[in-house]
Image (cartoon, rainbow, N blue to C red; front, side, top):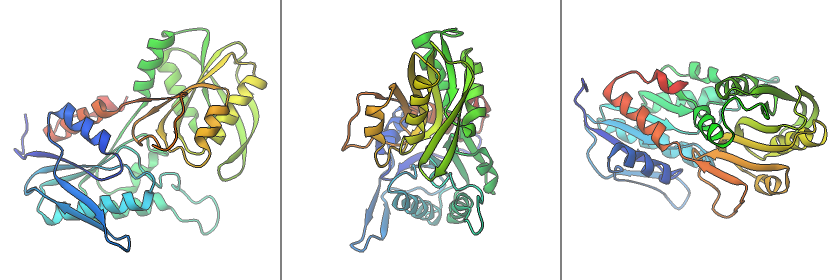
Length: 319
């Protein structure tokens, strides 16, 4: 039962309108009327073209590239909703940008993820709904509730349908040490063995593969990561698994397809047979790659939004 009696309204910025439309269809709702434009000097301008007073407002906006524009769009839209007397404002961020800068790795480093958390809170958001944060501890950077959905159940269903559960000829591999916990839990979910690619990173967006921990020879490998940016790490891990480990074939999946720089060219030329991504970030329109396939998260986010609106538990969606 909905205790607060407010009307639900879903709005979207310019970052991922297709996903926002899909979420609204699942909710049987019309997408809210709003326009995000820019002045000639690049300043963001937001117009909300329908009343939101007392409404339970959800703003769908991934802070993907152009990251700063999309972040400012979301912040200004939150501010507009707050000043228009929205009852509650939830920032729905399928992809949380700046999530990789979650700690100081050397002297005088910023912690940009904390700064972004502060900005979202100060803008007037009452809650954040996101998916597969780069580091789970980012939830603690906020002083408002954060719901961090997981994409691994979607991948689990996909690969169980493709290869079957508990398949001894398949193995789940973490492409780096940072994804070990995520990949181990995923391997348990689909009942497959687990291995790790150990690498040493020399500089940003570059890595050197050193060793493979686990037996992958003759196996069909499923690599799981949280994001694919330039694809250097993923493609390097795939090469090591084939050349060093003797794997049979490589499949890969990740929640967020940033796909910047030479990513698509690297994937096309790599040993990866198929890369499955979630549509938290839209596919780059200028480039196409037959190896890349997308699964939609619209149903999962629609379910989460519906439960938040009805004020019932959404904890079952985290697993």
